[in-house]
Image 1: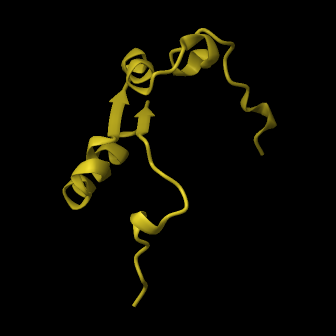
Image 2: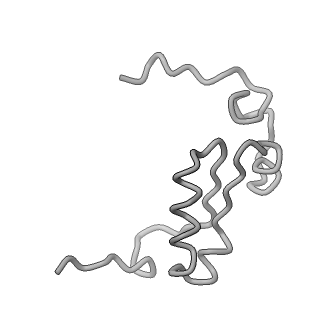
Length: 83
């Protein structure tokens, strides 16, 4: 049997999980997993789809520092350095 990691014992704190432009299967998976999450963690989970402005507001991010790919006003993210 594989032990399941307890999020209470994790060396980090999840303040929020925000996703935009997620594929349909991610939305379906999160919808299926949400009932098994604690109410506190489920409240910190937000999927925004194409609503990047809503994601920036909810996350408290300044659009000046966010790439235009994700609804900000900064230059687009360059994927050329990724292998």
